[in-house]
Amino acid sequence: MKQYLEFSKEVQEAIEAGKPIVALESTIISHGMPYPQNVQTAREVEQIVRDGGAVPATMALIDGKIKIGLSDDELEMFGNADNVAKASRRDIGYLLATKQLGATTVAATMICADLAGIRVFVTGGIGGVHRGAETTMDISADLDELGKTNVAVVCAGAKSILDIGLTLEYLETKGVPVVGYGTDELPAFFTRKSGFPLSISTDSAEDVAGMLKAKWDLGLEGGAVIANPIPEEDELDPAFINGIIENALKEAEENGISGKETTPFLLGKVKDLTEGKSLVANIALVKHNAKVGTQIAVAYNELNN
Image 1 (tube, rainbow, N blue to C red):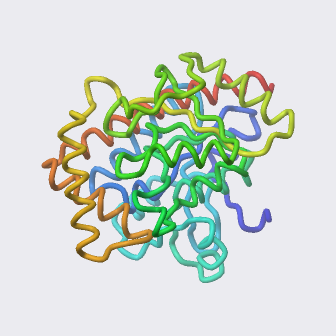
Image 2 (image 1 turned 135 degrees about the vertical axis):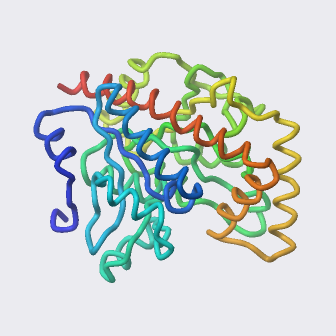
């Protein structure tokens, strides 16, 4: 296994010194945002982690290696390159064997973080059960990964293009705790509320860290969703964004777009139809997640040292 992992100098030094580390994905750079906002956001998020007392570890596949921590030049490359594959669990082996560039999704980043012993991962939003999944069976690999891989995912809930109710049902079946951080209902990415209540809520990073330690000490496999709402001043009007999502879903269906192409299409269409407001909101929520995720990583590290 170790021959596939390559640590940046910063991350390697953090491991040796017992410092808290926060995993970050690369799909948000390559497929989630346009250039140059993608690279700028990645750099700013990494700095938020550093400012909070932890070390950022952005994950990606490069030249047959799983890179745990990217250099500034590598961030720039992933933001600009047009030959970057979107890597989930099923793709990792092939992309490593063929030495292709791979940007890690939520599921793949969880796997890479787990291999590196990193327990807290910050992203924008998780994938989930797509609308109409009862006929298409279109369910994100993120959910299965959360059921079996010991990494906590700090996010702004499930992307609002999904069926949020079914996503929560699936997570419950998999035994995945969904914790509302400063909220008692699941946030819906661009908006703070979805209308779906959660059974666990807290505003304490220490409580979250304690829950994770107890869960994993007991051998209860699987991750956790730490659902952190977008800041109030940055959220989009629910009626406005939901109407736009409905239009985008209709256009995707009319154009025969399905599978892993669905999310990038819908997010791109939402960005266009909101005249860029969704991109601004996306950047704001990722930065907020980085701040909270770093606090949780620091608290978890203290419990284990």
